[in-house]
Image (cartoon, rainbow, N blue to C red; front, side, top):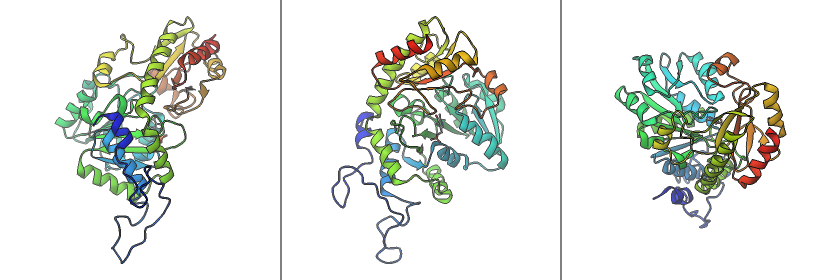
Length: 379
Ligand SMILES: *Cc1c(COP(=O)(O)O)cnc(C)c1O
């Protein structure tokens, strides 16, 4: 079955009690048993919920995995994956990560004796000198946030497999429409479903998808034991969002291309980061592992001052100034003061995340209106 069909049908059966075509929001905390242990597969809603199950099955299907697990947020999903580790273990992570991921690594899990190495993974061979017998996980995000670098998932998977290291890929930016890390050899896919999967900026949600049964059982154990589960209404919203992911992504890609090309020829714009450009340093890898280039774009201004950036950020009318991404509406953001403020400035600038960097999540509005908005804001 192809992706568009899976997005609409996978995991969703008519409700057994009424035939409702849409999975009901099972707003319940517990389930009645006929006799102790005699139940219909559901005992308590932290452990099992039919709305969540439908979504989890859909998530597994669209990432070509076997098991999907839903969490209360993307970071709760990341938290569950990191709990696979024990003190003394080491993680090799890419150095251009979502700020909250960097924070949970360095400020939470580092306190429990897990060591994190941050390196430039645009060349996967950079991983090799850091690997040792304690290395248990490689963590990548591609395209990276906010610099839209591309990491070769298959190349990382070869290194990981040979050494029995788990490869986890945060696939939030690409979504399963553009890329399926499990097909490229990754062991674990993580999503902030708050973004493209939900797609309507109305829910915070996270997901983990795996193929391996043992890994799935461990993650389900953490999901239930630690309890960062989503409510059924949130699961319903993500399920509904999924049904249009393919057509939304198609338009995000089309609009992204037009906006990236417009910015690139603008006399006041400095560097434009978008992996669809043929001279993007990792364009060849993007072409190989992705089915399109998405609607995330970052750019700097030739006037590299904070003031110039702030003027653009407060000057757009259709692009709303807000954190997050992946919704139908266009957003504009300032990584240095918003999404990536938790990374020390020195660290940020070293990696190219300068003060004047602006990030766009190009929505699915009519692109002529988006261009008009940028034109008046940049001046
Ligand atoms: C937003 C985001 C997260 C965190 O997800 P939440 O749902 O906000 O907890 C993780 N990774 C990436 C790439 C993100 O954009």
